[in-house]
Structures are given as structure tokens and as C-alpha cells.
Amino acid sequence: MTESVRGKSVNAAVPEPGDFSRPDAHTVSMGDSAVVAGGAGFLGSHLCERLLEDGYEVICVDNFGSGT
Image (cartoon, rainbow, N blue to C red; front, side, top):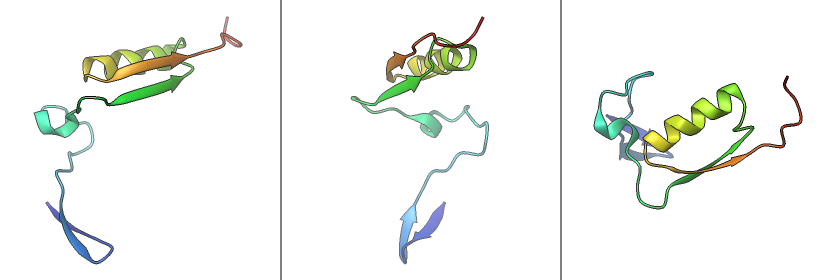
């Protein structure tokens, strides 16, 4: 796909929403990392797991301040 960014032509591989079947749709380079705030909660923990599966280094930050 070719898009125009600030007047310049750019080739971009843009996956369709939810398209995780293409390996290039979410390729991670060495050194890619993510910080997940609230990583101990339901959504945060699932996000951490997905990022780890995709090859990210994940740092989870949570103060356990809310919840049951």
C-alpha cells in the first residue's frame, strides 16, 4: 500500500483490523519494549501476555490500588 505522508510517497504494510495471520502485521525488532500500567488487572494481564507472545520485553506496573 502506498500512502502520502507530508507530501511524500510512503510504502506501508497496514494490516486490516484484527488481521494477525500475516507475519509482517506485527513484527517486533530486537529491543522493542512496552510498559503496561495496570498490568496486574484483567485487561492489563492479557495485554502483557499478548505482548510477550509477540516478542516484546514487557514491564508491568501496578499499585494494586483498586479491585476486589
